[in-house]
Length: 117
Image 1: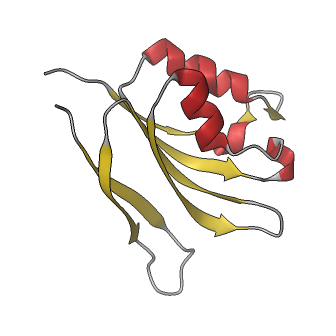
Image 2: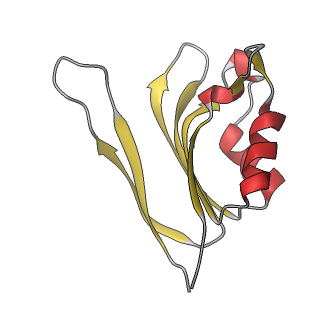
């Protein structure tokens, strides 16, 4: 079995030369590469600058990923951002892994078992 995996720091949907929020750019990029599994970083959830969107759901629904997981890493006054997994295959055993080094910025990873069959 062959499948395609992509990892992508989407910077909460803000980027490009103009530094504007345009989630459509992220959608277009992911659609171009046609991944079966997308591992995403800096996915926004309810952040004002990111249109208050729950990006994991917007991306998942728009791109046809039936299975998804999200774990916030940074909680803001309004909203949060973190890691997400979008998958065309079922996910289980979804859990957060703390990668923080003492006295450094908090770092986390999202892990899951993906059932390919």
